[in-house]
Image (cartoon, rainbow, N blue to C red; front, side):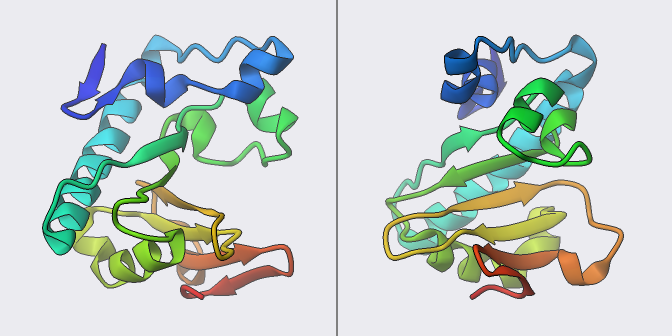
Length: 156
């Protein structure tokens, strides 16, 4: 089932960790509208990055929907947007490193409908981009970088 032109329900719910731990990560039918809303945001991001790069730039999802059991198993908080199907973690290697992607997106969060943008665990070859449709209640948490050393405002 396609949630949007470039994202399927299967990839939005896929999880190596869930499979390894025997956790059923099927999305409840009541969250399908949220999943579609999230993938619509991802479509806008994909189009933006593709335009900036001058070529098609696919987004490679590493985590979309996560059931509460999976979310807890990986050490994430219960109030994460992943169990609500309102966020995704991804990379776009054809555009660049996650830090480069986050820097490109940060000035355009409103236009792209990004509620929260996180540059997560950036390193020379690692890390990922987290985008969610919900705007955090604390404005300073809208565009942040998370590293092993902690959280800081902005993209670093």
